[in-house]
Figure 1 (cartoon, rainbow, N blue to C red):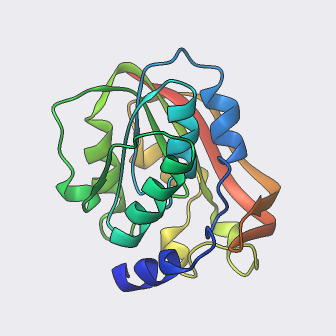
Figure 2 (cartoon, rainbow, N blue to C red):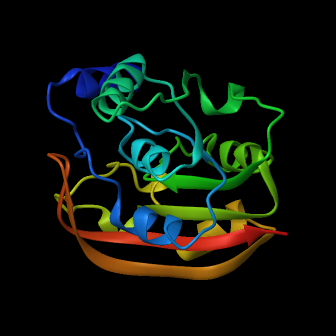
Amino acid sequence: MKDFWNQRYDEESYAYGNAPNVFFKQQLDKLKVGSILLPAEGEGRNAVYALSKGWEVLAFDFSESAMVKAKKLAATYNLNLNYQVIDALKFNTTKKFDVIAFCYVHFPAAIRKKANQHLLKSLKPNGHIIFEAFSKNQLGKPSGGPKNIDMLYNIDDVKDEFNGINFEILEEKEIVLNEGLYHNGDASVIRFTGTKA
């Protein structure tokens, strides 16, 4: 799995573009600027956007190639990105963040709930979550995402894995993606925003 992502991020172009995810941008722009954690952040498009808006950002991914591309993207805007290469379950910080954003974070099924719950420990009480990922109805669509249905989400998965969250938006939605080479076309996604109890 790690080799796959290193290979993808070694490509010259940005796999999912260099603009922030639309839902992420819409929701982040509604919030008071503070600190944000971006797990499995890939090539840094959301982190760089948040940095450009004055957020204190910590991003991580398990791909070394992702970090190289993310730092390169940040440098084009004269921004210094705090980015770690680490597995989600090994990530640890004493800091509590105002926001965590999960943008197409599809952990393997065997660790997904544990990883999501582990990361939520780094969110302040009343802190915000922004989440967008492919739904189980994405399977078979050519616009991207895991080919293993167990790595995709439905509404019940979200309620189970993010228990203790007060949901503001929670929906499955058909959208059209236009994010680089690998997120393009009709897509089925699960989106939510919420706060930690």
